[in-house]
Image (spheres, rainbow, N blue to C red):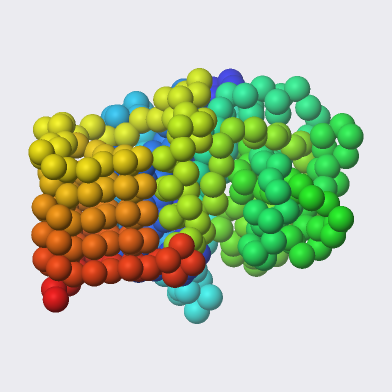
Length: 381
């Protein structure tokens, strides 16, 4: 075991129902964001900056879009080594069903194998729906300075941020920054204007994580790693670590849209991308975006390889998007490879990859009723 070394568990099994159809063929972690990133880039960047060399990804389905994006992990300095690299464990939902039916031998076999083989003294457990640029080294330093067994990371948010999210957890913290209890949102004090929302991120010794798994096996409990920790938290002394940077909770189409639009605000974009840690993603070299004579652009974000002949306002445009003459795109997210025909009008839309909108097509949603088109769809008049 390497002293003070860390391994990371990425739990990519979060409920993605409220993000369909964008998650029809991809997990939340693979969602494109800010014109050229994926949500998983933020986890992997934090991991890379912390010098972590071993990552275990536990994926609900096939994970094909994850594999395609991360490849060998070299972009984040996570190439396979003697005990390091990215280890992927897909079909976790199927495994849970098999376990329920008595067909699987060991629900936690891959978790135990990963933790043991990675040889890290500590482990951090993270999900993918929380968008943040987290300093894992700072979390470890905080953990080592306290007496707790586990450290939970939280963000102080307005009550309005969580009141419509009944599945989120909030922390009650004592004056010494230890956790008193973790509760559902509806059980939080009604007079509190700001709440400490759990970021579903936990740090502990690796042998403590193995202890939790052993307890679960003895009690015949099968849970994803984050829910497993949550279950046993009341029985341990728990540190709390407050994250003060930019955070979004990508748990619905509306939340995804809101976070994307916030990236058009300079202060929020800078808070996420221009802190002490830069965000790393897979490099795709391409020609700069071309703005034709007569194109009109206002408060918009573009990736490379686009051709813009029409109007784009208050929108996020991903790679290789073509927006034809007299087309209008406002308050929208247009993903890679989309084609917007001449004279088409889009307002409050999210277009997934390779969507084609024919000439003259009008798609008008509202902030509270977004128009969402799934991947590869074609619309004509």
